[in-house]
Amino acid sequence: MKASAPGKIILLGEHAAVYNRPALAVPVTQVHVDVEVLDSSREGIWIHAPVIDLHAELGSLPPNHPVGSVIRKVFQRFGLSTPPALDISIQSTIPVAAGLGSGAAVSVALLRALSGHLGQPLADDDVNQLSYEVEKLHHGTPSGIDNTVITYARPVYFIKGKPLETFKVGKPFTIVIGDTGIPAPTRTAVADVRRLWVREQYAIESIFNEISQISLVGRSFIESGRPELLGELMDQNHEYLQALTVSCPELDQLVDAAHEAGALGAKLSGSGRGGNMIALVDQPRAESVAEALLSAGAKRTIITEIK
Image (cartoon, rainbow, N blue to C red):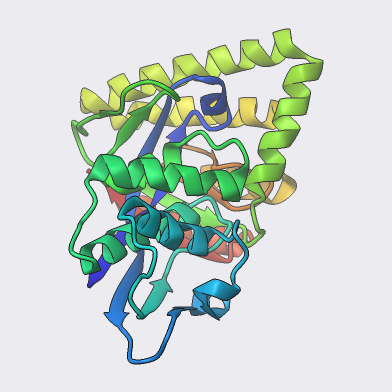
């Protein structure tokens, strides 16, 4: 049984989303995780995931290992005390710790492939809930955005603790993603913002409220077919993320390079302190903006159309 899951980017609202503010996220189908589950002739459940240098039998993994946790959760869900012998192969083109949702994509694809192989495919809502539980192992107090947008593979308007809202794109638009190549430690960045919030709660709540308004207005621009107006909102969002101390010189350098190359707006995307930035561009400028990002130090770029 095979299953795939896309990557994701956060357009607007990261970090504030952890504090129950809205965020906008969209799938990135140019990168993906592919999982294949096969019956095995040898004993045990063997996992092969070259992208994270994992070649192991399930029993050798600690209880909090994210991949092992996904597999065990499926067996628990179906009451399998003696599961069959399996070979599980995990392949991915999503950079790890780059803000593109690699961990959630592995969980989603693995949940679908494994439950399908066992003849009991999980519904999307169940996949989303189980993958969120695994996200807690990766990130401590995750917003839930990654698992949600990757599970449903549609643009998502997300408020933590509230019913999921997907929304339609009124007119396609183009985003260039630039990867700093620096691992983005989501757990650390979220914890640092939490400390900042505890120390300066009034000021940080004000920033979260401003980011909330940016996300609300951004959704209306996307739905009404005016995505070109997102550029200014992205610039504002980046400034607020700088104030939250989650940008870094490398991200700021790529944001500046995107502007100089003609981007309509640019910001970091994800937890920050590394990982990716995104730039809104007119489609004909996409290649030149991508080249400018590489010249400014990006390790890789992805051009994706949001539709």
